[in-house]
Image 1 (cartoon, rainbow, N blue to C red):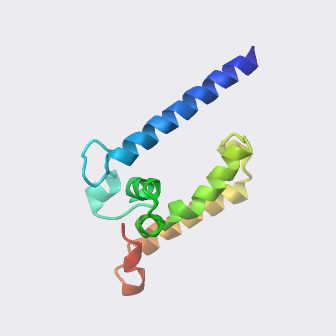
Image 2 (cartoon, rainbow, N blue to C red):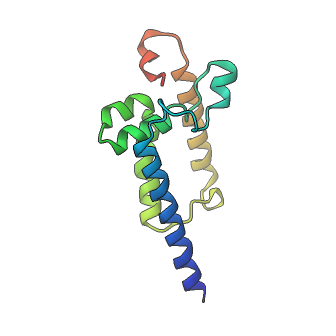
Image 3 (cartoon, helix red, strand yellow):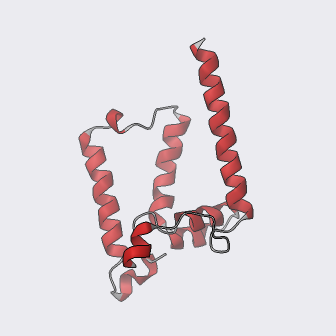
Length: 128
């Protein structure tokens, strides 16, 4: 019985992912206002580690890898890790990770957020 439930959840999840990908493919986040806006950016003008992710995914769906990397390089770097976890059918739960990996990921995200908001010329390309 549990196997049938797992199949239903898998099919529902895959269907939802395909539906989201289709919406993101046909409706560019830069042109349509129904996508969520980053609260940190709206309130402070500072880009969070996720800023530019929707536009990056839209670019990836259109085969524009360089544009996607320019919009959010961290997303593109972490996508193979997420893909590997999904293919390996591991549950993406923080409780399964050792504290070292959780702190490392949080540290990388914080460092990325700080560096992408520096006004210095070498880091200006990291702004979404």
